[in-house]
Amino acid sequence: MSNNQITIPVEKTANSRIGDVDFNDLPFGKHHSDHMFICTYENGQWDNPKVVPYGNLELDPAAKIFHYGQSVFEGMKAYKDISGKSWLFRPLDNQKRLNISAKRLAIPEVPEEIFIQGLIALLQTDKDWIPTTSGSSLYIRPFIFASGSGFHASPADAYTFMIACSPSGPYFTQKIKVLIENTYSRSANGGVGYAKAGGNYAGQFYPTQLAMDKGYHQVIWTDDNTHEYIEEAGAMNVFIRIHDTLITSPVSDRILDGITRKSILAIAKKEGIAVEERKITVSEVVEAAKNGSIKEMFGAGTAAVVSPIGAFGHDGTDYQLPEVEDSYADLMKKRITDIQYNRSEDPFGWRFEVK
Ligand SMILES: *Cc1c(COP(=O)(O)O)cnc(C)c1O
Image (tube, rainbow, N blue to C red; front, side):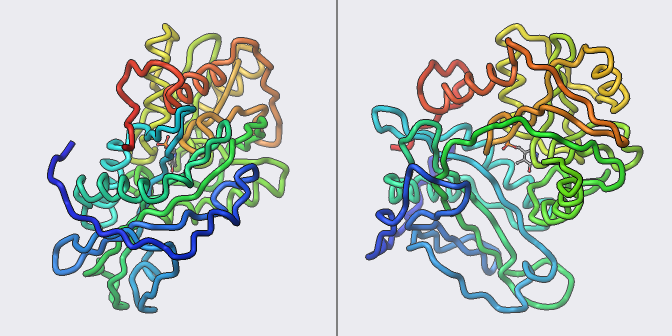
């Protein structure tokens, strides 16, 4: 990690909102903590990093974010253990991935020390916003957008990097019913699917709404070319257990390189669970559902950790997945959250204390 120490002024709010929030009822993403981190890019460099009270921004209507969607983001969490210490999970992976996304969108990369030290300064200021109720955490949203203006379709000359936080309750993972998509696509070869670019999610809303109208919760994305390969589960990576082997699609320029996904692969290897990173065909999954060899399917991502799938639909037929006793989804969720909340050893070195 970079040792280059930067100065981050902190302007504290005179009107904390923390007393207005019911920490026993924290719908995902609804409340925001008292402060935010902000840093701007002008004249070819990132400058003026600071922590300020959370509040509205003032932007030129011609800011390129509004017209050309030049924006990228990250999703991560801060956790509090029972002794009151605060932790992050693999934060440098988020920092690196934000820059991988930024590069693809022609956005200037944010230096590691600004990301990490800005994040730490914000969390130190808002540490009381990290919930202590079991399973709760402070969801953290770093993002960069084109604040420079002009209607010309070209990269902006000014950008804003921000971090905002939202205390979030436990994510109850009732099993979801998913639809294997065979019309719309989330991403394409050579596209931006591997980036956490704002527009990727806007493009998913309509097909997901159509699936919801048919009674499904989420879409399983397939490859744009043939719709014959399983790629992701909504905005999560996808895992399928056939017999006792855990299978996930290899990352590519169409598939986001999830930190939860990599963590599950590492834990599975350590636990002696057979894993395969390979292409999964829709027909293989349908066949496995018919002959009973499919045992589990789940999504993996920071918000829910794992999101078990109870049934999937394909070409007008629904397939029920069995209830298994030795669920890999449950095991992975336990192993990952035990590390995140400092309840277990961390043999991988993933935990990072915010002091
Ligand atoms: C963020 C995201 C994931 C999960 O990544 P994590 O690092 O595990 O949170 C998976 N797929 C998509 C499309 C995503 O946007």
